[in-house]
Image (cartoon, rainbow, N blue to C red; front, side, top):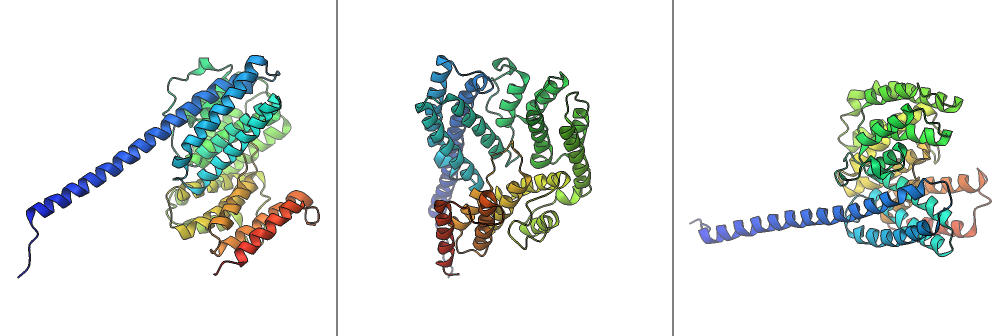
Length: 388
């Protein structure tokens, strides 16, 4: 005779399941709330620093104290956010580690009264924050009370908006800044253009909007020959990318990504083989970086992660946009150190080694500092020592 479950037992199980699910959701909600509160504090601290960071004059005594206090506060806030960041994808954690290292350098700069260096480091941190945020498609909801009047210029407000994912406002005020025909140096102009195409190609993939915006920027009166030529090449690159619009929007698995990676980067048969694209080709790579970040943030199977890190490292280095803090080498080291037994660990190491050789000595490999060579030897030994 088949035994039936007792009604009280069934009820107890249901209560337990409901309680477990509710507790899990509550814990996640509390974690998100805690991270948001920390990020809001970081955002407001950075907002207070923007007038100093964009001021080309030496920091006065009051500003020096604000720089010192703010760096200490940021160190505490980023320490507080670490458990939440550790739960995210490897690329988020790597960006976090870069920021922590930079804040340590900023603390040392403050100690030795080198406040110009502190300003430079903190501006770099805004780039790392922006680079990290462009890894997904979220928009800002954390700073509704920070308005234009808190900043010294449209450009400063646009930079803050870009850093904090308020992309619509960033584009609005970057465009407004350029429409006023305010003359900026070439590097700053290129940075503005790069931010705009990052929003519309990497983050959202809206090539029509990118084309319309760059065509509008074509009318800017203070282009240099180089910036004008670069803009025209990027427009051509976007037009080429747009031909594959439908197929690019259907990336759902690593096999589809693999097709696009090799179409855009080539066969990758040798380390360093994909490092030198022209300006048009960089547009496709910018889209590819967004596709790789989005896929990695979907939490793919562990065995796929080192492959994505390898591809991301190659793309990040080959784009070489100065508005970003290049994380290429750190992606490759993460691949080697965290996924040592994976077949791609050797590929990551070979690419990292090639980057080091080119960085220090061109193709000769004879001028690598001893500590860097020791690191390379240790990484190779680590791979050799792991059973495959």
